[in-house]
Image (cartoon, rainbow over all chains, first blue to last red; front, side, top):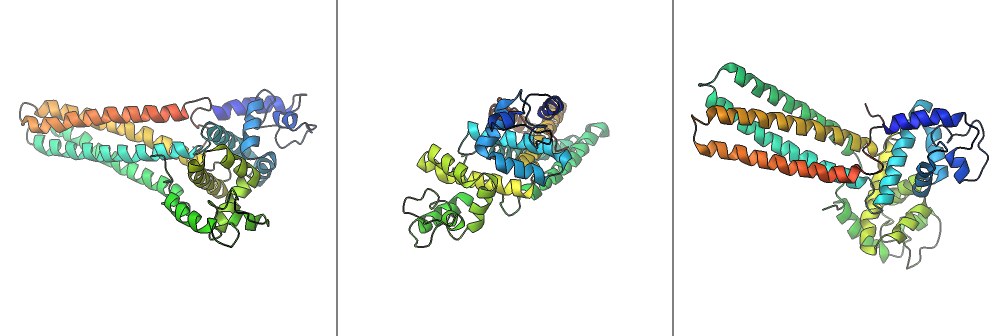
Length: 171
Length: 171
């Protein structure tokens, strides 16, 4: 939704006569090749004000020039998301959300493991008394459980690099 | 662990004769009241180089002065985490991790709901054939499930504000 909103507004701002939110904020002439214009429409002044306050205009400009044109809208939206999170929570920023989500994933996975273990117990308990059609879904659940293990590994790869997973507080 | 590491190194760097990583990077004299020194020890030059590249030294300095002294170490560590994530992934930064985690939580919750539904089916199926000691844990699981719903609400409050949850790509 955020992406779609930025997309629609960017197409309108890129060809509008009014300067983009960035050039208006920086009090400079908005030229046709303005790097900010497609992603910071005049209708959203706060979006640029936030990223400017947290990252600085020159850093945002540098980053936009370092990524491919088709990646710039996502880059700007992720910067705007991080900036707003940091303004709401100056200590943890959006790392606070990562910490909460990490704990949720660990708890849910433990709960799922325990529930699946109970399901197996019931499956074996009832296997002599019920039809195999009730046993089959149990196997499906265990297969799904495997999928989530690999999903966890994917996140592990993302967040298990040099900077490791966040554990600098939030308890 | 990251927090503890920063804590130990900060106490050493604050009273060492060598300039902190920030003052060394900025080629300025590291004064006793340097705002960076406790959090950017000379042994970790990359930590400051990363936050300087992404946020800029002046923005980091401003942020440190805006938060309480006891919050500064966590603030620096979360900034360093965000900076390193952005350097690894210039398009999504640590918002990429939020996106992956959000999808993991949704999938795990759905899987847990489905598994609990199966558990209830087995509970009722076996309730006439098994002792109540097997039914009891099932009820516990459902109670735990309620806990996770409230956990989800907590995250929802964090991430469901003005800037909403991230959905700007990552598919």
